[in-house]
Length: 122
Image 1: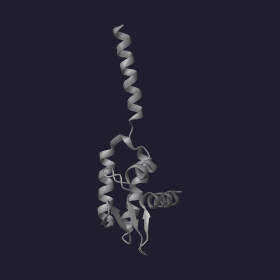
Image 2: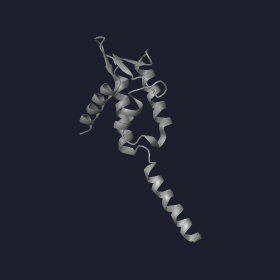
Image 3: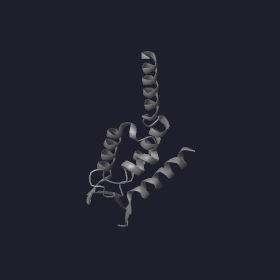
Image 4: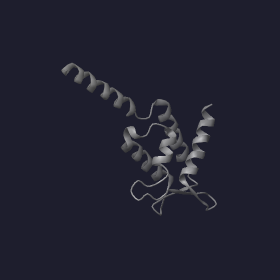
């Protein structure tokens, strides 16, 4: 009986460990490339909770969110959808102000940048 309990505990632990994986190397490279591309876009402004931030502050903020997310984020798409698109505190969507002054949803903007990153990697 004790052996069966230990075996069951080990199997449950292994199953949970597999689910708790964070970004693998390829996905982390995609996120890093996305943030590097964002860093080069000094012509846009990041809007978080109705306050405007320069791109370097946005990149720093998003890297911090990624670090805190740990194993909850497994793909670059999840990074965009769950971390880079809205405030985890207020729930308000992030926005990006383009060079002409147009405000766009940050999720849409980051998905476009991710497509650009993926196009460069082929």
